[in-house]
Image (tube, rainbow, N blue to C red; front, side, top):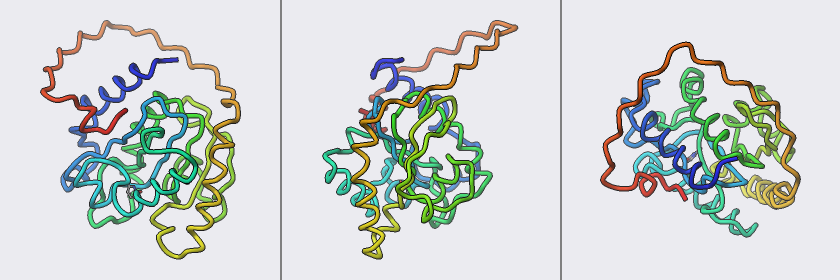
Length: 232
Ligand code: URA
């Protein structure tokens, strides 16, 4: 169990050392900013969307456009705010023209998400829409069949309570989807009050054969990257 500060620092390191200049997939050629994820590094509740849109790409922050405003509103209705949760996406880069994420992009980006979950240790993960739901459930069942039904699933080395929800962008229209999303949201506080799921036995570290060279010292950043990242 890490302190909130340790989690925040570990997330910053992944962002600075890997995600910021990531070239794992061709999306790095077209993106403006990395949208790594933002919010409370010690959150009990995590939301996982699909991929950054235009506004997110411009600002480097997740869910800051129309869908994000709806997310904020629904959070407010259950007494929560962005600072209380952590919000990330399946993809950290915007696909051009907001096209669907491709399977290879999802696969290449996946380990960032697993490590975010491993570090933050949320009690509940709300997957928003089809892409994150299918990814974290490793199953093709769609969101219209699964929304509002929680289950315990392994995400990386963590067992978490997974709670699929409609994507807020899908709830901007029609009103019936918004009402369903709102009803599903109302159950979140009760899910957060449930005990943390039993965790799998940790996998023992494999002993290293050779000593790794000491990493080069990282040049002091001029500004705190957490400000840019939106970490709390
Ligand atoms: N839609 C998403 O799935 N993620 C965002 O960050 C914004 C819109």
